[in-house]
Amino acid sequence: MPDLGPMVGGISLLAITFTITISLARIARPDVMRRAGVA
Image (cartoon, rainbow, N blue to C red):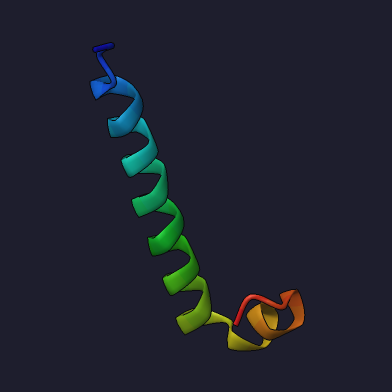
């Protein structure tokens, strides 16, 4: 079984960062998020 620890950790960190960024953007600029088609 290969060691997937670093890869999984990196993906998790990216996912968390992306989620926080989207959440902050949605709170701060809902008009921009609607125009981008995300919200």
